[in-house]
Every structure is written in C-alpha cells, then in structure tokens.
Image (tube, rainbow, N blue to C red):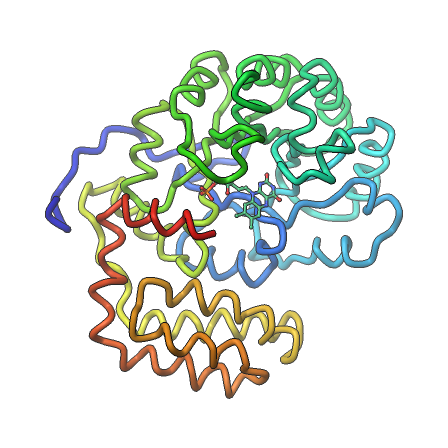
Length: 357
Ligand SMILES: Cc1cc2nc3c(=O)[nH]c(=O)nc-3n(C[C@H](O)[C@H](O)[C@H](O)COP(=O)(O)O)c2cc1C
C-alpha cells in the first residue's frame, strides 16, 4: 500500500462514557508500572483525551500504602482521568471508594483482566472472569456507591474453553456500568496470540453501552481495523503508545482524512524525549526520573538502527545531561528515520514489534 494512500473512513469520531464526551474514539489504556503522571501528560500533549492512573489495589489503598496514594498524584490538566481498582471483596471496595472521595477523577473502572498469577490466585483481576455472578455483584456495589460512572475491563475469557466475555458483559451491563473495556485475548493467552475481533463484536452487539476495545492497536490503521471489524465505540491504546505519543495525533488525523500521516522526524522525536524526560525529573527528581525514563528511551528509538548501539549508553546514564547527550544523537540519525517512519503504514511491522514485549 502506498504510504499516503487515502482510505475511506465512515464513522463519527466521538465517544461518550457517562457524561464525558470525547472528540476521538482513542483512549490511553491502563498500564501498571507505566501510566504515571509524566507518561499521561506526554500523551495528552499529542491529543490523548483520556488516561488512567496506574491500577490501584483496593486493599493497598485501604491499608494506607504510601506508594499507592502517590500513584494517584495528578494535576488539573490531567483530566478527564480514570482510576482502575483491583479487588474482589465488596467491603474493601466500598472502603476504597470512601478514600477516593478525596481525589478527583472522572471514571472508576474495575479490573477483571489482569492475568498475573498472584492476582488471579486471589480471585482478583482476570480471576473474576470465572465468576460472572460475583463480578456483577461487585460492580453493583461500585455503581451504587461511586460518585462517578463505573466501567469494567474484561478479557475474552479465562481460557480457550471458557470464552465467556459476553456473559460477563451482560452481568456488567445489568449491574449498571456505563461502559465496558475488553482486551480481545483470554487470560491464558496473556499478551500473545492474535486478538479475537469476533468476540469483541459479539460483546458489542449484546450491549447498548459503549464498548471500548483493546489489543494490538499499534497504528492508526490497526485502530481503524478494530473499529471496522468489531463495531466498537472506542479503542484503548496500550503498547502502541510506548515511546510513541504521536499515535494519538496520527490516529485522529487518519480517522478524519483517511490519509496516512507522516511519522515524526528526528528533531521532533528528540524534542519529545527531552520533554518527557523533564516531566519525569520534575515529578520524581533527577536520580529516579532518569532511571524511569531509560526504558522509554528504548521505546522512543525502536526501529531506528542508528540508535541501537546507543541504548547501552542510555541505560548507564545517571543524570539529565548524560541522557540528553545520548538522546541528542537522534538529531543526527537522519538515515534511520525512514525505518521509523515506515511503521505507521505497515500493521505487520507493529505486530512483529509487539511480539518482543
Ligand atoms: C506494561 C503493561 C501494563 C498493563 N497494565 C494493565 C493494568 O494495570 N490494567 C489493565 O486493565 N490492563 C493493563 N494492561 C493491558 C493493556 O491495558 C491492554 O489491554 C493490553 O496491553 C492490550 O493492548 P495493546 O495490544 O494495545 O498493548 C497492561 C499492559 C501492559 C503492556
């Protein structure tokens, strides 16, 4: 396909959850260990309208865990904002809601998708998929007590023999949720294997509330494919936004015009890395901020052969100055840019990239 070929686009680029209206169907998906304030703000700078804070354990919140409360740090420009709770005990979830009254956010989501063994072993996260009735009851408690609209994030099912997303989705709808997020893989699949568009479509057809789909939305083309093949109302982008906040700007443009947007050039990538690094340093201080930003350096420079040898240096950087010296080489990496620029038009390239996460 020619890189800037025009593709027909035929949907209204709007999404509404509760009373919150978005001018784009693309949201930033929740990512534990990633979705801190600097990450949210760098994505918002490129048109991301909605983001989640990192997933919060209701139990940790209730037991007063200091890190958990720090994870809820935000600023007025960081809105609308979602919070996602992990939990399986109605009493603890209610207590967590009492604590959350001191915080400002716009959507409350219950996680029924996290595949991690120690989480599912406690019956939380994707463990809830095994018990649609209980999931419905927990959601009812949240809907009855939450000051903001409640959503739930589910997976296609627990495993191949139990693809029960539609049953869970109906229980959630009956409990009164205002929207449903679905990652089109089973818990057993984790993050591997292809996303099941068919089950997302089935869930969408069964519900009359917004369905936001997730899985392999690594480029504007893949977002469009998700919208087209599933009929979903919105798409939550996760790994596609790592080192790639432009995905929000590009997808908005692509869905409006059908024209594949230009990828950012080396100067814009270097400027954005600097801006993101500075947000990390403002938030965490220089030592921790540089350490946290290092992983983003790899993501910002993936697909750029000229930058590959510099990743080792970036991992050793301890100060802003050292990291910026490495990031500055980006401006000279002009020969690499066509490769970086190629992935917007090539979904298979993204698919192969994501296998490495
Ligand atoms: C590092 C990482 C952390 C994640 N943390 C969460 C989380 O806390 N809550 C959640 O519902 N999903 C979480 N997810 C899943 C994503 O929100 C998303 O559903 C999944 O990655 C599929 O989308 P993608 O193919 O666009 O990455 C996480 C994914 C990644 C890669």
